[in-house]
Length: 43
Image 1: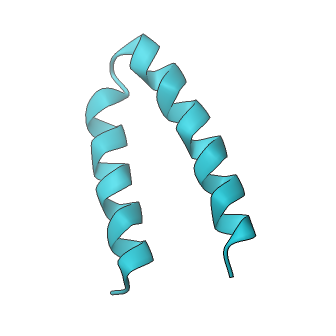
Image 2: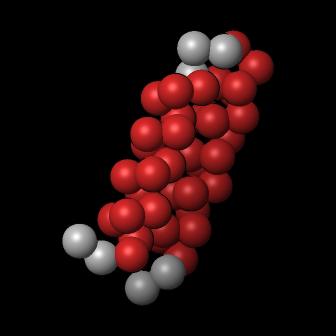
Image 3: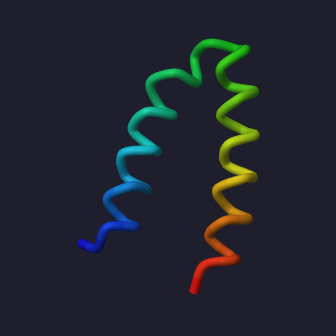
């Protein structure tokens, strides 16, 4: 498992824990969009 996968797994675990709170769910959705953009930009 590479570093990027470890980060992604930790992120998804954290997201799963906090999504039950609505205001945090909004932040999580935003972070997912940012994460997607960063993932596309990095080789």
